[in-house]
Amino acid sequence: MAKKRNQVRRCVKKYIPYELHPDDFLQTMTKIFCYSRWFGVAGSGNLVWKIFGILILLLLAIIEGVAIWRVIKALAGWAVDIIGHRSVTARLAGTMFYASSIVTLILSWKLSSSWDELAAFWASVDQTMAINVPPDKNLKNRMISVTFIIMACVILEHTMCMMSQIGFDCPASLILKRYTLMSHGFLLLRTDYSIWFAIPLLFLSKVATILWNYQDTLIVTVSMGLTSRYYRLNNFVAKFSVAVKKDLSRNKQSNSLNSRNEYTWRKIREAYVKQAMLVRRVDAWLGGLILLSSLVNFYFICLQLFLGITQGLSGSFIKRLYYLVSLVWLCVRVSCVVLAAADINVQSKRALRYLYACDAHCYNIEVERLQNQLSKEYIALTGMGFFSLNRSILLKVRKDMAGAVITYELVLIQFDDNGTTAHIPSQSNATF
Image (cartoon, rainbow, N blue to C red; front, side, top):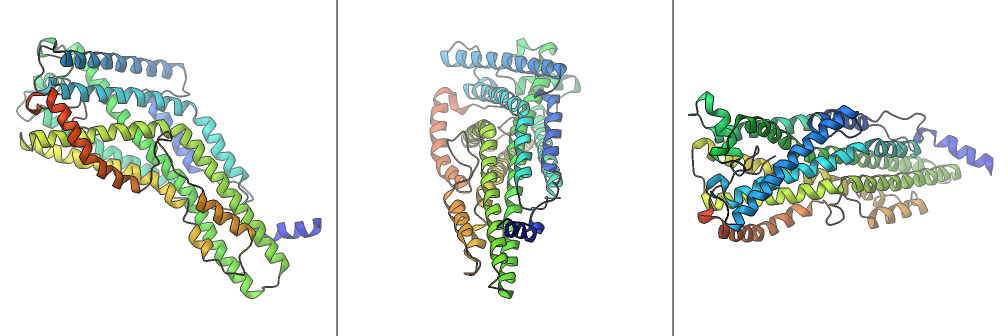
């Protein structure tokens, strides 16, 4: 019996890895978390980074506290000015913007602090995977490319945002004042303006903008890593299915060959089990950011459409152009996040096509178990269990968006006279 077991193991040596391949995903994500310390996500950094992160968090919390108080004053009728950039809509948008940034900072800090534990579990899955799945050599380049594309689009959109708020007729000496009062009019009146307020607000608004981008970048890059793992497993199944069919066509009566195939199919099934465990572990850490991103994105898309309905394409050319660019970019950004995460769900069942196409001579108990496992087990990233990110969610969002916009508009019109204008600080009109 032992002799036969050793013979089977020698036959499957080309499917069993002799050494672990370096995981570019873990290395890239570690660098991303290191760079994130520059905007407050200290994570497991040293004391200096943690003090800097706490300082950023406290300053954002002060701005949020003032913004909430401004909303309360506007709703209670105590506000001196509720016109234009100080309307209820503008105050609520600013409050949501900074609240989102604070929660993003806290959740990202938590994820960064736990990254060593999560990376160790990720690596342990590779160590215990008993099939020779080649690494994804292009994953690192894809992650870096996607990150830089997002950064370039955000810089372009944000530059247009600043130009639309400042205008081309503003003297150089008044640029900072006009930008501060336009982007943070929900916080400051003209009589409250001071350069000692303007410079910290300028810095913190940029930090908040980066954090807003950062949460979606994390979701996209982590989704790319999980999708890559499923993609490689599915390719292994496809190639192994073809190899088994060729081997059995040559010798259908080989007991050692049948034993080898059953042994390898069992290892493949165990690899999918471990991959599902990894997705659930990642989802437990990332679910809060997914929920936050979805809620905030939905709110600001509604706000954008509300502004378009109530105001139309009014104002200067740069403002009209910026409104269209920001709305399109926001929708594209949300779609990219959803589709990147939804690919995990798609790839988790793609191997079924190869299993269903198996020849009758290739079929065994392990293939049947793998079919049942992949068809019945639902794998997807979720928003803390409230919803799953799959491709059908985009259609559902479109269906619910119309009703939400109508409800949102009716509520806000009751508070804002004639649908007065609103600007979101730093990223006006609800873009990242």
